[in-house]
Image (tube, rainbow, N blue to C red):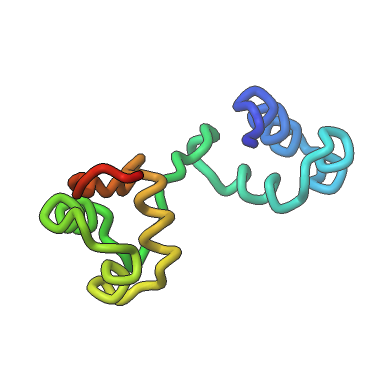
Length: 109
């Protein structure tokens, strides 16, 4: 969870007015690391966090699933040279489920 821009600006202005970083840390209950980071920034607004880079390209996986819908996770993981859990996680994050529809071969008794 990020700190508000108001708190960040109050901490930085406290330090610019002559207060120490240690005193600001105690007074505003913020870690020294955050204070040092805020003092070095030009803009105090929080940085946008994106999805981290992964070995598996999700768009290629999406196309592969569309082209080969009947492959199982193990076969996809071998194709992309990743662990099975990487395929499972990516499919879950993209809200893709694997449903097999076998034709009915007769009535079951």
